Image 1: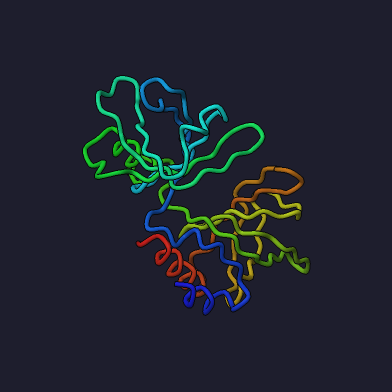
Image 2: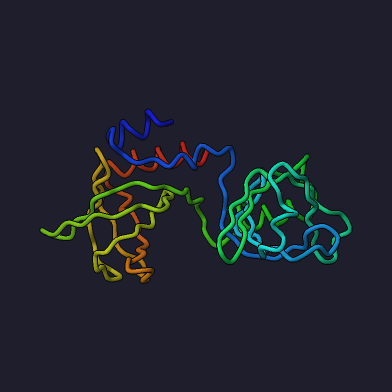
Length: 219
């Protein structure tokens, strides 16, 4: 996979390794209960293999790496068992990665996975893959640097200090690829602009990019 990325984007591309996961993760936000009323947790990412959650620091001792926990939802008789695979604590809250133990097929947890990460009714039609690629953008004679934060077969999201406006057309240079895109949304975040872009599908090099994304998502 890394060889394919380097052929398309060049040998100096930054790759964070996250897309080597077996399952594509989807962002979400819903609450569950840990164990038998041990505390409330907030699920932030979910996939077929597990999930990422955030919780109060007081729950951190109950979520040590290697421990087995039970996830409960109101109105559901059976808990979903999971193993803690990593934990990171900040000043205000705890982040935890969990891997499901055993099959979740037919359970309420599988329903969550289908609705958020793979169900036709999900908000996005195409799966987005997290990236950490440095790219160059061009608007006329001006150029700017950006960080590509995620990508799908139809577009991507980038972080940049450049001032862009909705409807603006630009060109993206990503290693050996250069494609056209248009700005669909812009929002400010921590001194940067978070920009949603849609690729111009008729350009030949866009097909190479789509092939790469399909490789990353297993499509």
